[in-house]
Length: 203
Length: 203
DNA sequence: GTCTATATCCAGATAGAC
DNA sequence: GTCTATCTGGATATAGAC
Image 1 (cartoon, each protein chain N blue to C red):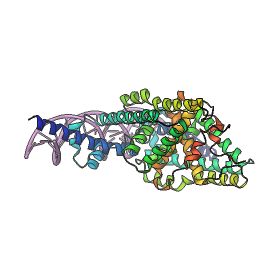
Image 2 (image 1 turned 30 degrees about the vertical axis):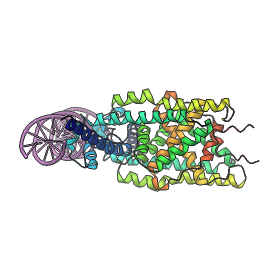
Image 3 (image 1 turned 60 degrees about the horizontal axis):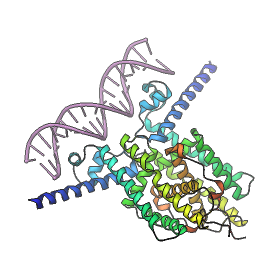
Image 4 (image 1 turned 90 degrees about the horizontal axis):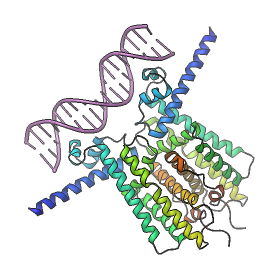
């Protein structure tokens, strides 16, 4: 009896994951409003009525995805912060890992893209806006902190850590968007060009 | 008689400009689908029926805007190319001018944003997709050419001009999007940090 | 040229059969 | 749990009065 209940729970979770995965793919390319519930259902391979067995509305799916996207993003940056590497190496590692993610366009890259797209769009539910407002700064802060560590030990250039962090993420985001928009023309720019923004040249 | 006709033409153009300006503002923030014809009409200050006196459909307005956006963008980069400056100075000038544009959010910044948003979204008319496909590479090519000039005279680092150009525009785009999304938190990152990606350090 | 009213369409969400 | 059929609302686009 408990067995069956657990099984059902698992099935339910599995279904939800399917829905989220299809919705993520579509939202991150077409945006929230341009994505129809019918599109999601079709991509997931079942009828559109069924979606409402698992989610109350399209917005609810969107909000859940935004929530997951930020959890993952923040988690990843905190992992980065904890790594046993010097600051410059952390920056380099992050650049390479993120670009690697974008090149295989899987869920990870789509989550990143979802954040980038959702942040600029005002046609999203209030709840999603709140999540963005509350969380978007975290990754910037973590990178800024890493940069400040590197400035203390003299390996990172002595410019505003806020500006350096903004450049870090803006460049990454810009590349992610380019890659999403014009996939086949994308080439990963050489790591050391990117790194030259951060390296301290006075030695 | 001819007078009146001309006057009418001018009035008509004026109206169209109003519509385009309102539509640009809305499309560049909410996106095509999330922007309702009613929103555009309201912003422009007249009834929604009237829009159809000047445009056949919402898509038509969008396509015209995309077209203008690329004309302006390509024009601006060609102007840059022709300037009497050395290559590094052109890059620096472009960075500063573009960032200045984003900070006053006027039509110029919205056009740039429109391109950035539209490129990633699949929910746009086929005709708009074609315009994007045919034009998006131009600005990248112009910057690549400027970079190659700078490499010849030894002022710009000897890395792939394609990659350098991609970094140039991706960073600019990323900053434009950040600025659009989180306006009040935006600070223009120091020019020389950005420039250090391009400067030749072997001297 | 401009407005109001309305036809039409389409997508989100619901109901009910299986 | 899953599907099909349907209700409902809202948005595009049109028609027709002024």
